[in-house]
Image (tube, rainbow, N blue to C red):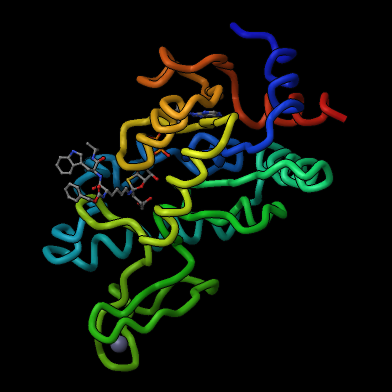
Length: 247
Ligand code: BJW
Ligand code: ZN
């Protein structure tokens, strides 16, 4: 396993840093990763079969109950030291005039709660629910819904404003993410399995454009082979160590 010192040096020397995060970053906040999410009553389902427009059309009650359970779990959870270290890294970059872009696939908004600014959300957020008839969006921070699916004032069903399989990612977010991957000189991929595109393409794009790449994950991933440095450890341990060693 790589030691921290070459990565610290690369962070210090970079002019533009881009970071992509996935579910592993929120794991130590008590949020199961996407592939761990099927617990209790949900154990018999495949997450890829609930996170689709087809599943919602077939059984909107089941799909919205699953998402609401996850929303309430996020309500009870807090950002962890890994999220806070990334917010500190952004501040460190701003003070030195280094460009910093945080791109996340997570829908929990823990990066923002930890103090990160201008986060690019590729897969939307579980806190906003959109009417499938009139498009009205509402932030939902309260307790469980009264009925499933929740209804809009117009009578339409509300769904979480997340991106399901087969749906397009928000255009502006995706454009900014590609631009950051193309122009950075250091790309960090943290806590993501690298199985879901187009997010999984970003590290390859950064690599093709000459950026150095770092992976932080408890397990190797398909992207490990192309990374310059791989740290196989929990993000909530390694990120504070890495960022605080830079002071
Ligand atoms: C730790 C740790 C610790 C643990 N510290 N690490 C064939 C047919 C149809 C479509 C496709 C197809 N082939 C490809 C596609 C495209 C499809 C896709 O990629 N499918 C693959 C599964 C094959 N992508 C899409 O459909 C996207 N849209 C799109 O491409 O539009 C154009 C298009 C349309 C139609 C056809 C073709 C193209 C949309 C993707 C949307 C993904 N949405 C989800 C659900 C969001 C809402 C929700 O949460 O329910 O986003 S899926 C899910 O995966 C979620 C995540 O953001 C995303 C990524 O997961 P992530 O974050 O990597 O988590 P995990 O759980 O996979 O991994 C956790 C990692 O953490 C692991 O590596 C652990 O080791 C590690 N870890 N603890 C550090 N403590
Ligand atoms: Zn409506």
